[in-house]
Length: 131
Picture 1: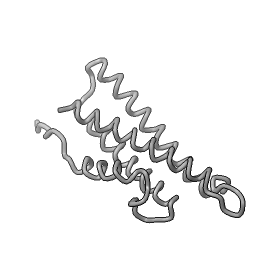
Picture 2 (picture 1 turned 180 degrees about the vertical axis):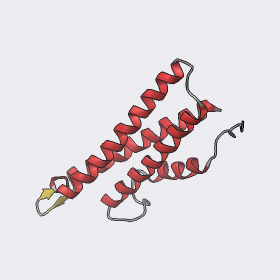
Picture 3 (picture 1 turned 60 degrees about the vertical axis):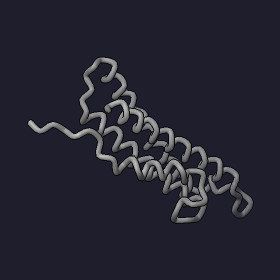
Picture 4 (picture 1 turned 90 degrees about the vertical axis):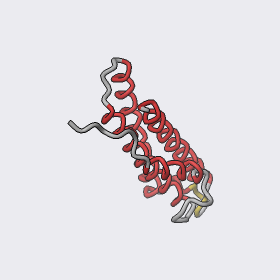
């Protein structure tokens, strides 16, 4: 059961990376006033936020992997990593949708992964044992 949580955490990270790559490519190709929108500070700031959240998720997964290798990972740590990574991936998917000029993601390349993220954040995971 815990492997499912770890897999969910890694899938969320992969979705976030895919959304960032799509947003970055779009911002480099979309021209406004004869220059790409990536040249504007507001767009750059949004892309940087995406990279920061992805990097934090990568570090969290890396640390969790080391704990798993040492058999020291606790279920609560695994759940926290999944929850954080899914939340951040959903935030990045929403930001990526803004690049398309839409509040929803129906036309973006991250629409199917974001639906999966919405479902996975609602899953409670294994029941915690009470002392």
